[in-house]
Image 1 (tube, rainbow, N blue to C red):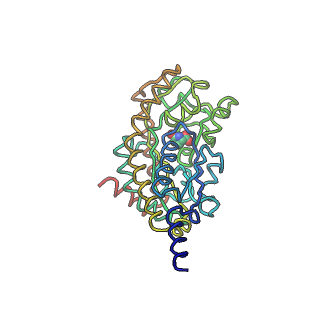
Image 2: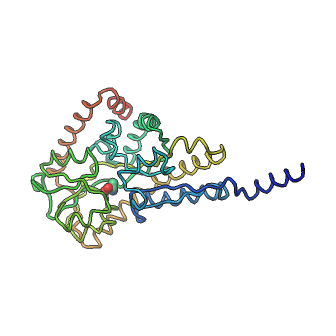
Image 3: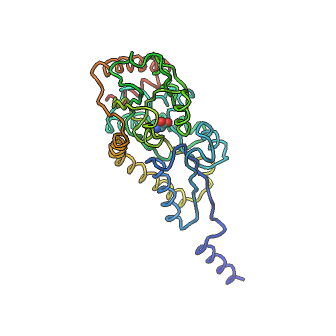
Length: 320
Ligand code: PCA
């Protein structure tokens, strides 16, 4: 009897079939993006380091769950993990808006510093919603796509502008444009049917949506550097054994570091692709920049007024 038990225990240690599980991880963006590539590499690392005990299936591009539904799907446990663009949570809590504030952090090192300043609050707020933060991936800096050259904000007057978050929608208002919320998979159709005429996003999303089919001009205003977050359902994570939890945390740390290392270069190589495809890639005029920065100041003030304590704490941490 003892032998049999030992044999069973041994076989379960070696093959571990009883404990192997498959998790699902919906993501919003397509395979060409750095964030999606890192999601695959995150899943691979965990599969290897747990010897197949935890297999994570990545479902890119909103294919399993629409982007706007991903937060709820992870929270309810419908899926165990998911990737979310932080800015879309802006209406839930002002602290999430730090991610889309124009001209608050426009270099990658500033964006990292801003993230460091905001992370404790963000993490705590996600915890209260049953979500544990695993890692972050920054996007290349956000710049302007338009049909015509833009030398000043009024050149865009009345244009229909894509918005991907509440903060960006406010920016569109202040620019005298008309915001319309469109997720990335719908960008080509939104341009071709005239629902949008301009957008502010990364070179990567321009490449993914083949922006050159719809607009000719890319003005490199580099207004902010937003991020995706990858979260896990807290209960699902707690149910794992310690070594599997550690494997997830180790992979998350590695991927986050790799993301910050690669993002600047990815922005440059994708910008080169826009030019190769025939877009006019231009540096912004001084006038455009000073007008946009002024709008940025208004947005910061409005943001602070929304939650003076929490936002004030982020700004304080960031600036000191
Ligand atoms: N691409 C995503 C988010 C930020 C970015 O560069 C988008 O346009 O929706």
